[in-house]
Each structure stands twice: as structure tokens, then as C-alpha cells.
Length: 217
Image 1 (cartoon, rainbow, N blue to C red):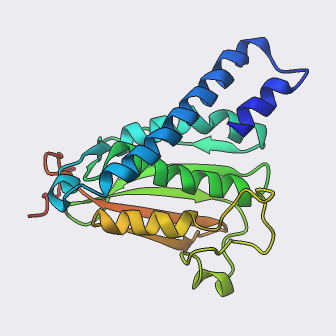
Image 2: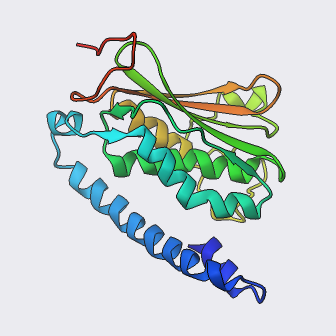
């Protein structure tokens, strides 16, 4: 919302982009209300109901591209998001998956240097699991910070690139949400430099396994 409203305030804002910025503001505010409603409803939701949820990793990546393409461009970053061959149906609410995955994207935008690249990749993991991989070419996470990476109220650097808007809770909450869905979220140093966050989730009950694999029992 802040990004789109700031772009609309620029005197050189292109008229043809204004409707898209307005749409970003509307959609972001709607999602924020949805996150709150989802949290409240989840308190009364059974584990069986949660496990029955399903969402598409392919659709999630398409949503991330649509939502963040302009912001990445404004920061001089290139977005690489090859269309997945498989849909990647996973056992988690679509709204919750978007909430977690956009946290990984916005972290890359904040901490990766201008002029870098951000890559989103969907792939099959061990039988019955799918992964969404978010990779950048930033400085990566120092070894001294990696142990505290998913602890609450921790930031990736000593300085807050969000100018006081970061709570230091994003990665901690993301890991907890994914764990509650039966998955995992972890960090790896990227070969050649950069950061790689891997979000792994169980395949949805009605999901189609990729070629050469079988769904988990």
C-alpha cells in the first residue's frame, strides 16, 4: 500500500500505470483484512479441516509476479519466474500460502542489493512434498546470524531497511505457520552468492503427483 501510494504521488507517475497502483492498494488492503479473518477463524478450526485445505504453488507464483513485479522493477531488480510444469497442489490455505511466500519476497527486496535478481522456482521434493524456492543474489545471511534467523524479533541485519516498519517477526511466524501445515521452511547459502529460502509443504490430498513420484500415504 505504501509503495503504490508513494508512486501515485510522484509527479512523473505514468498515467497508464495509475490504475494498476490503485489495484495494488485495494488488493493489499483486502488481503490484510483476509489475514486477520483467517487467523481468527483458524482458532476454531480442527486439524482435519486445516489438512483438507489446498492451494496451487503455480498460482501462488503467478500472484507474486503480479503483486511485486512493479516494486522489484522500481528497485532495479530482475524477476525470474519460469512457469512450473506442474501445478503443485499443497495442503495449505491459498491465503496463508500467499502470506508466507510474500514475506520471503519482501525480505529479498529489502536485503538484496539494487540491480540484483530474484528467482521463484516450484519443484517436486521427496515423494508427497512440493517446494517453493525463493532465491536472490544479495549478500546472503552471515553465519553468525543464521542460528537466530527464525527466532522472533530478529532482523537479518543490524539496521532496519524498512525504516522502523519491520517487527522482526516475519520469518518466525512464517516458519511456525508452515510447521503447523506439516511442512518446513529453511535457509541455505546460494551457490555463487546470495540467499535461498526453501518452503516445503505436503501435497494436497487431491493433488496430482509429478511424473516419477507417488503421493505420500
